[in-house]
Image (cartoon, rainbow, N blue to C red; front, top):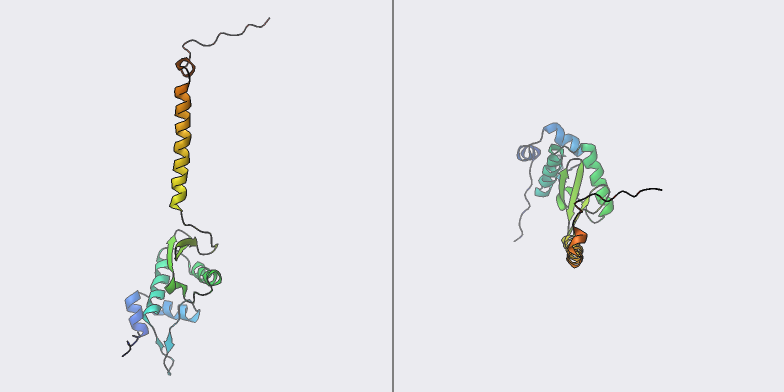
Length: 163
């Protein structure tokens, strides 16, 4: 016995996600988020995944990302990751200022440029190790020098007389 898929009416989606009727119609007309199914009478029916897409788009807008930028992000993501059909559902998107970061598998990258943002922790540890070796060499070098070389002279150096 299979699990029956639950469908939501547009009024239910608006109430759950917090959208206006106009927003929902505009997003549907422009293809930002579309209904998974339509009845024979043309009425939209939405799946849980559609609600996730609507909620993601709304959160991006609420975070200050423009609708044009969201569209650009979606187009670019489908170019970068051609197997992803619904980026708002299949990927984790995070807006920080005007930058939209995408978390996909084990990487994070900027949605428009594709520039990777993942910080390799091992790189940081290697930088620390290099720094510690350098500091250690400087300390050993200083300990090896006679103490009078490291101390600043008490008196200014004698002026050289010109003839």
